[in-house]
Image (cartoon, rainbow, N blue to C red; front, side):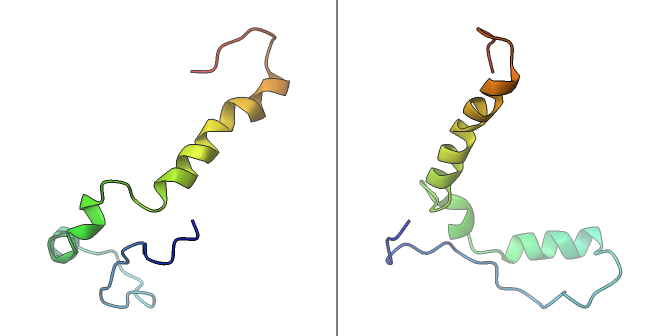
Amino acid sequence: MNDEKRNTPRYIGPDTSKRTEMMSRAEIQGRFDKEVAALYSQRDPIWLPEFRQMFALVPELLKPHLIPDSMVL
């Protein structure tokens, strides 16, 4: 989308790029609890229209490799 006013919410948390050990269950829960609710409560997330469009192309991409008149569910 080219709409400059719409921004995808981003996770802002600690830098874990150099971390090598797995996170504990409590650490994961803590990060989830601190997450901005807007990330989960968008009615029409900015990335969703593109996802729907790409997902709709799957049957078209499969069509040349399927038996004629077959159904893709």
